[in-house]
Image (cartoon, rainbow, N blue to C red; front, side, top):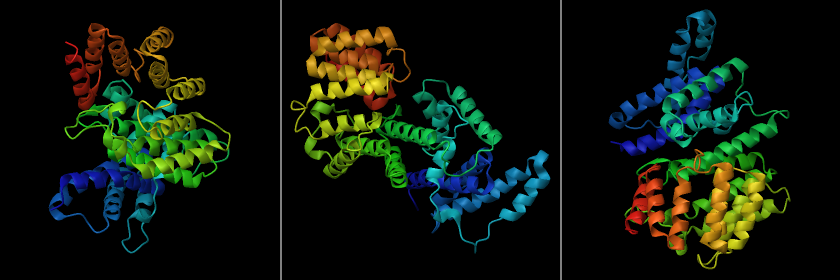
Length: 411
């Protein structure tokens, strides 16, 4: 009997391939997603007892095909046309299988179609390719599950109305779609590196998938410096993952991590990659973030980290990508480089102008950063209050335990 978690991992890995195969064949994204989900459900019911088939992807695609035919037939308005399609696509076991193709990237480009808003692109990709549930995506964006479900449904409807095809980008929309794909991969990696909810700090399935897809994108677009920068950023960040929590699943701050356990192979690959793309002199946000990660990775200890250089890189980065998370990270860098009072002053200034404490992407991190800075200045009461506030805003249990422990230590 195969373990349930192994099957769940396999299904998560295969889901984009199945969806891609169905979209490629039928060009109906919304119906294909329903058919894919039903194929996955069928597998989750049968495989634990019957065992995983020799070629699980082909099995899933065959089941998805059959369900797709049923769903198409059920649409009365297009019954005749869909019947013709159905007759053409009943799977032939002897025929070559689309299971041999990796459709993940084409699926990514479809989800990042210019007909969709940036928010819809991200939501649809996280759902279709990243495998996140609607609830997880909703939490990441600070909206209700019902609102996110509506957004995803509208995105699928818009794809259908626009006649979007399952094909690589053209010259006309290439830059926009590649930029959207990079952003989506970045978000998937971040969600995996620090899960927005649950009892695990990280989700290695998501970080691994983001890295795999970005490697594919890099092979497809070797001259794109930002794709190289994004991959370097992921590799350098991932190199520290195993030291971010201890054996009891407690969060370990960067300055307390055992750097001898950082993955040197990933660091070497990431550093070599960022040096290569940096030489192209087309510096963008992902390359700057990778450069910051490289400074951390190459520092022998927390004390020897070149924080002034990191603060300067963040200032540059903020000008290129003025987002709330980057502004908050610059606060940390400035505090490390020039002292907590300087960091607090900058935090207050940015908060007054950009409302970091209210931004969905930073509202739980803002009080956590503030708490650390207040603690460093010796204001224990205010620090404790901020730790408690931050703990109340995170849905990640590892982060919550860490924040509550810091608050308890300041009683």
